[in-house]
Length: 384
Ligand SMILES: [Zn+2]
Image (cartoon, rainbow, N blue to C red):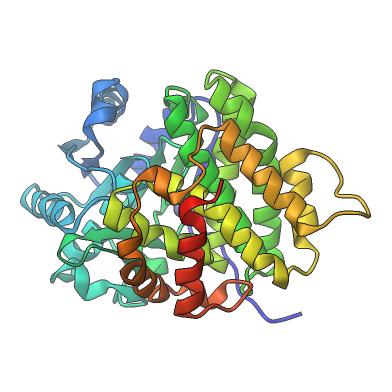
């Protein structure tokens, strides 16, 4: 067995109504001036108001930045960072899906160390700790509440850059399934399948360890058994709890094991065509799983059980998992191919070049050249 390191970087509070623990967490973090970072959608449905009332009750000074958008850009980070400096905040509370959490992580870096977002692009460029960040996910999800990564779109390059460092990981996470129970079905499906893919890629890649396997397996078990139920009815409390916890466990798995070709290839799709992150991943998943099957060491059979609830059996072949994943995508309303989400073939060479820059290609179970990545994009264009 290879050597590996693991630790849990944050203090997580899980439970229905866990939001009520927020005043205690705010007291513990020792800051009396917090910037709430969220988006207009959550403001419109009253979630932002609920959190603001809790901060007020705790007697803290706060300001708010609510203009985070999906696939947030470097401009959003700069605007939010400017407000953070102007209002003299000393901690951040990120409320939302991956976007507000990713913005907060990088605001923390720029606020403390100056410069531009691009100065910190890549692995290990953050010089030291950031101000306390509390993350409250409202989707299940990106897992950003427990990961060491922030993904920000650089519009000048049509490129989704990553800032990767344990220093940017939130210090506290509030995992309250009540918050994901208002999601529309399309968001529940796209975010839920993304969380499953985090666990899957971390589980089958070459960087997996017994620790990340434990997290990934439990995540796939929870999500595989509950994603259909949850998309069908977000008020299903047991399914919401399973999805929330599965999403966070998947985040822990990939914070340590990274991902694979699915995420490496989905980021350029989102950067060029503004496809939602989870949808881009889900559309690519069957084609890449088929490609990776050649490297399978028996893990596809285990994933099959998490997706179907049935033992794989002696006659199992990896294509049976690929077929089940196509069925799952169809049940969740995920388009079958890249053409159906508006991707055009002319961008394939540029997308493949960008995908190769991702560290995730290096840990994909089957090694890949730029030609392989181009072939996979082409195959995923029209496959049904
Ligand atoms: Zn993802």
